[in-house]
Length: 232
Image 1: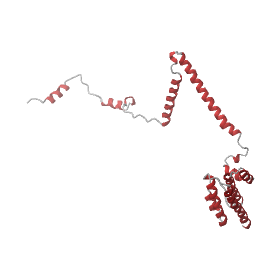
Image 2 (image 1 turned 90 degrees about the vertical axis):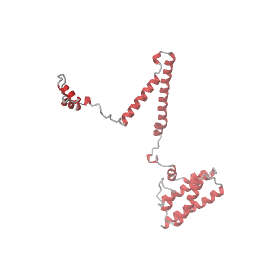
Image 3 (image 1 turned 60 degrees about the vertical axis):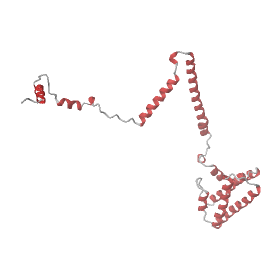
Image 4 (image 1 turned 90 degrees about the horizontal axis):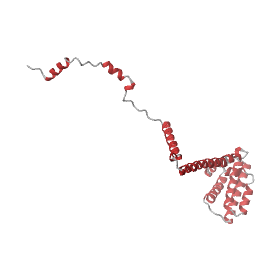
């Protein structure tokens, strides 16, 4: 009985003296050596690193734009370089000038009373003692729309001074109305606030007759405010 081809091949391998059995420990030593680890996972680049790379890229592009063509030694390229430098210097000068004009100068000219800096225009007007003067000036110019605004702010001023409302810039007229407990004052204030909002925010122009009619009711409200305060 003849041997199978596989057995014949195995016998022939055993008979070859030049074949050496491979040592598995050598393979294991290569596995634990990082120099032979070809399956490393690349770490994801951080946002800061990406930003730095982007800045470097933009800076390199800027330098390429500045010095483009210089290596050719052409006169026009050198002239372009000078013009680019002058443009950059001019822009820097403009930025410094604008900063000095709109920031430094504004700080120098700031009001001495720092508590007034953050006041709104309405707050400044309500704090004024001569709102009546502003009303008269607007009336003399036939600017009844502006005079109506001063009349309404004068009402808020009296409500504030008599502690009927707590004035705050961010409050609405509806907020002030909710703070008024006296029904007569609340009713008259509702009319005054609606009239003011319609005229001022609605950009509605008044004639003298319409203005005087509203002014009478505004002044009656101020009288009522102080009567209520006295009786209260």
